[in-house]
Length: 77
Image (cartoon, rainbow, N blue to C red; front, side):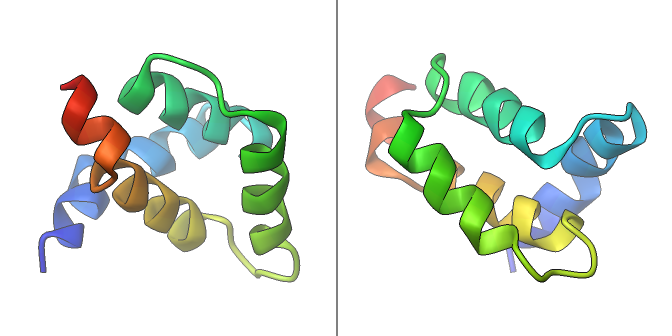
């Protein structure tokens, strides 16, 4: 599966190792993919999806993968 590329790139893992919290990582991923920060509702929905997870790595990798496969990414790049 191509999602493995997101894992191999270690973007999310590296951001966590730098001490960034999930909110800052979401901002970073949006800037990388869309050249903008997430809208308030986008960020709130994504942060809500992280509640109750043992580790944020896999859910944040899923966010990264979803951003890379979105229409907004395709049309901007």
